[in-house]
View 1 (cartoon, rainbow, N blue to C red):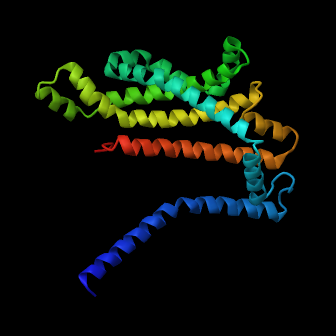
View 2 (view 1 turned 90 degrees about the horizontal axis):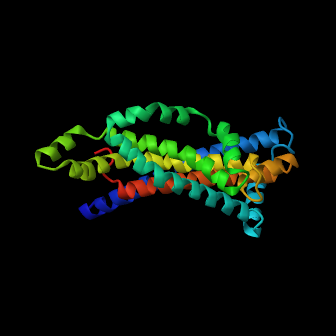
View 3 (view 1 turned 135 degrees about the vertical axis):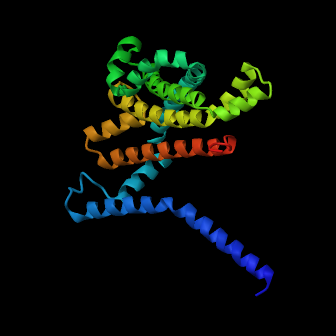
Length: 267
């Protein structure tokens, strides 16, 4: 066998291994649908209460193609991103400011941890009192929950910046502003992105909960609770499924952005 053929064989083998690694996440998906299908046809659960995965996917695809589910999907996406951008715009600067001063952070640490540990759903009645039953109240509730995660992670990233790089910058004559801008901010970005990724996820969760329990005309949360009340289980499971798919793709989107722009993470 010639050297060129060996190299070609190695490239093909590496390509095949890479493609196989990309397909690994499908194993869990297939396992879930397999267990779901077995339970649905076993007779242990009333078929009225648990449709098969194929029937659920059919309802999901039909709902999206015919447009009956699309307005609810769009409403939830818009509320989620509105809450996230509101939280990020306020949370990142505050988190960086808190993290740059350990004394300042310690002064507010209890408040951050207290509200971060309080279930956001428990605060819904309070937000309704202040903002009423409106779309804005749903966005504010989700933004508040995301804000706490973003502040905590941004501050934590600044506080735990590698001291060796800070000292190296100071030795080279960098002033406090240059150290903050060129070292602390860059060092904090990986942890900040963790906060942003967690923030978009919690925004979606709280928006769905708010849509369920605060009056609204459109939204996946409202669609889920309405379908449950009239025992339209196919539509209920389809709405739950599209919510999970949305959450997964939002998380993947932020992972891709993080790998693209925060390539020095962990180095």
